[in-house]
Length: 515
Image (cartoon, rainbow, N blue to C red; front, side, top):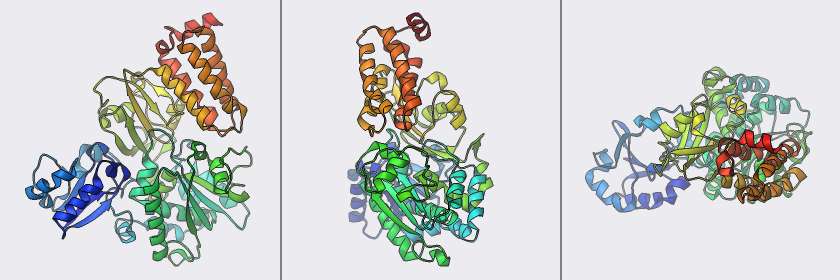
């Protein structure tokens, strides 16, 4: 008899460890498998049990409820007020298209055997039987774009590194997931780290790299532990090191822990940190694909990008490209947070609307009050009102609306939010996290906070709004990286959609009058 209890950080924070310990104490003969989370965070700790009807879930389960659940027949999937039925048939799960997250919540993340039993290594074995340029062509044909926020075509980046002439090349995974409202990287690292390992090994074969580094934020100790355990297991299985799976590929993989700098989510700052330096932005060119880690050609992708690669090689480029819309192919892992009734992870094809994610999956606000604003894409993403809930989750559609999909984080606010405070927070956040390399970001963010403070205080609002607009233009056009370049996005969107919070009724008319 198997019982599945998540080891995911979110589940453990609400008592999953205590639940597992209690089950083990009462039913010592039960095989307790610690998995990742299914992503339905409002149901954690979620306990699943193997039954003839599939894995039946119970949740949320508290440690003090375990005795009663076992007595009521939990091990047989018996009826109970906490019985949710077969987990894969729950509306939240059934409506998704899980590709990258297919095994998260299903497998033991520290068992190489379990990973292979559930379809792992199919992509790597196929890739190793192909020429490197054919692997790059397959990824290019899939339409995969960087899931870290920029949306740059992955195949083009890989082709550049493959074509670079150098005896030493690197693959770097940026797992410095620091955006507010994002946690998909952490959940994949904790719930299915072998998928990332397989994706990075395929990448190494495709571009000719021999070393890889996973740069993980220091706030993710459980993810670091899961990764290191999985890497050790991969070496024992011959999936890493010399002659990977009997091929000519040699690939060594290492975990490096960051020091808590948000700016290291930017690829060149991360490379500086990996080299033992202070995390500051490098001017481009040269691009990392040509001169990256230690000056050598380097692939830099984030967790979800590299985590998508095994499925592309296993199922073929066309199967992946058949999902999504326009130039946004495949799936994205959306994360629902903030004032939302049902927070968690939703993986589905691009093209789903923002409203479907917030209302259908998220269930509206946790407070029960009306949704007033949703921020998409992290602290540098735009604030969107419910009037734009019909916007499809698509890179081009969002860009045309002055917003960005980013890493897929969605933070919900109800009608009590003060959007002038949120605009101020964006500038304050930039001032705090700027690496200080360029003046528009380093000084502009500080001046932005001061200008918004004057607007909020009612001091010559119209003139200061004009000044704020000019400052945003300067930061967008003059900053070295997205830290300063994107900070104006949440500020502009807050002013545009919620002008009344800045003390003006008709923003356009007021600004025209001021100029």
